[in-house]
Length: 211
Image (cartoon, rainbow, N blue to C red; front, side):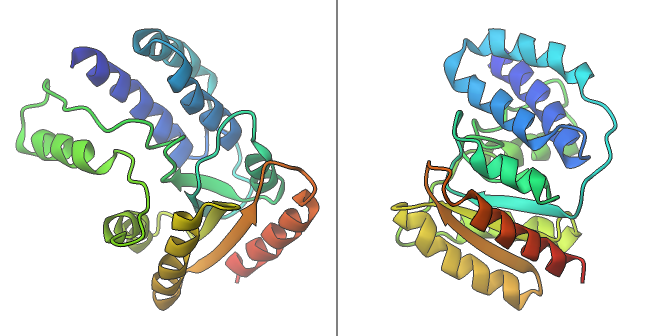
């Protein structure tokens, strides 16, 4: 438990850097992906060494939330396209990224705030895959930050054949549009043939966020 507490603390610092636009999306995703291929303690130690490398950098464009199908190395096509389109991903709910493992309880903070925060992170930071029935918790986790103006729109990534995510996108789009937020769904696969088409759509989407 102490090992995962330390690991979660390090990963939380990387997430904070991402929120501020200081940790580039591609590097964030590569680091989080590597969690699946290494010993937890080694990964945590390497992450701590990497954190000081990230510093202030100018944001390219509007802040967005990335949702949908997971993105795994070396299939980083969508990440490159998002950065090329000038979209700044500050949040996501991908099981290959921010939700690689649930939050750990901070036993060194026994205040009421610390305990409530630990419980909330433990039960809400973990991965939730979409189902064919009840996805309210997933959708609420995506919409909640919108009320705090933490992002301007949602990009929903769907791998072809990933039907639960595809169906979920319909409900999420309707909920977000009712709240006045911009939404775009991009369906793709592991090939690069559709890259230019996707980039054109992302650039057009960015222009709507500026309005």
